[in-house]
Length: 240
Image (cartoon, rainbow, N blue to C red; front, side, top):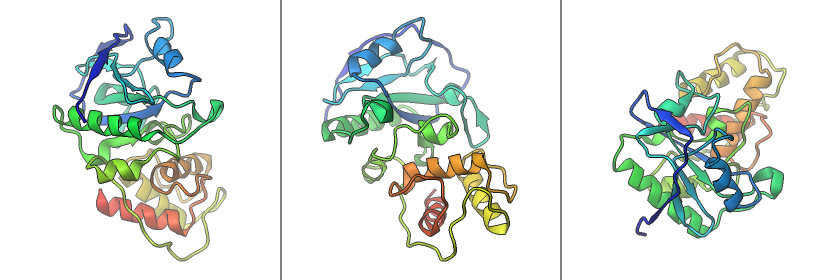
């Protein structure tokens, strides 16, 4: 697929303070792509992304990659806070959970794969730094959500995907305490989440587990760390 980009400049950007080494994928979460594009270009909205990918595969460029777009907000990954300075943001048109979340069309995913490959031809972006908005802001965001085909993206050479058989043991739930919770939190922290091990399964841990599930499990996203979730985390860490 040839990359054909439509220029749609947004005024919502500022100076980068770091060479980009991360990709953050979002869904637009608005009723139409046209409405999302308008908002991302509205100076009063003070939000933007570098690219927007429509459901039919059209790609719009809003902000030059050399500039910092305003897409991730309060965010964290591997010790970095506010990842806008280090990331390139891609908005993927989908109404999201508020307006009728639905599968992403293949034409759109093909365009995302082509765009990601093109971006990575210019910047050093490791597979373990291709993330969802929910990964870097799990307390606030759930996009691009459990229907986004992370496995297909990884099979195309972009990102990490790993599968595992469920581990033995009872599920870990909010309120649990002990060494199992500590090990879970340590694994999530090692992967990149802001989940300092305490041994107490609190609300923040549940939100982070849910974000991990939306990306790498996708059969449940309730924040309950069952055997499949824990085993998948170990598999992803090995792959990372």
